[in-house]
Image (cartoon, rainbow, N blue to C red):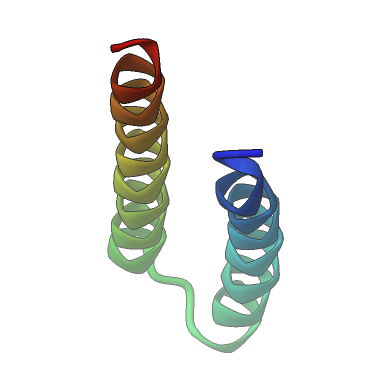
Length: 61
C-alpha cells in the first residue's frame, strides 16, 4: 500500500519530537529549538501528503 511507510514515519516522528522536546526542556529550555523541530516535522508531513497525492494521480492515469 503506498503511503503506509510514510504513515508510520509520521507517528514515529511525533514520538521523537515529544521525547526530544522533553529532554531539551529538562536540560536547557529552548523555544527556538522546539519551533524548528515542529516546523521540520510539518515539512516532512507535507512532503508525505504531497507524495501520496502524486502517487494517487499517477495511479489514476
